[in-house]
Image (tube, rainbow, N blue to C red; front, top):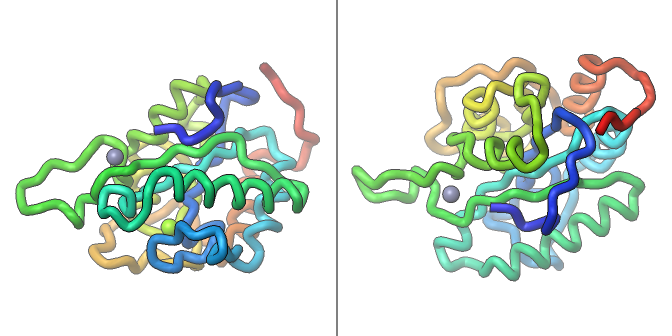
Length: 205
Ligand SMILES: [Mg+2]
Ligand SMILES: [Zn+2]
């Protein structure tokens, strides 16, 4: 599901997909209160670097706290508004935010079937690819959990695991190897930049 924008405007034909909690902001157990929003060191630097490469910047985030009644969709949206405003204030930006409001596979009763959007499923990436007319094989996924990496791989993206947040050691971690590993979002962004060269950002719509 898309939280924003209301109407997608594709700028490029490829994207960098970012996890939110543990990748951009501190994962303080279902973060949803604006007052508790705290950026991970170097995350803003990473976003500023990503603003220089020809990729749409799209957050894909499991928000099972909605299904678990920990917070509402409105709380999540308010948190996102604050996140975005601080990112824009720093001179970077986010182009879209997709979320899964359903239970994650680990919350389901035995035999329960997961939705198509909760990572490790690639549903959010596929939805964004449709909206933004993306070539997923030229797109990237950066996240702190193996379920992020699995979603990226399931969608055919270049995957980068970062060592902030859960650092790939979440409960029930999946036996999956990322294409690259990096210390934080800034270092992951350097890897993305190395794929694309340092040429100036030129929109090709
Ligand atoms: Mg995370
Ligand atoms: Zn879902």
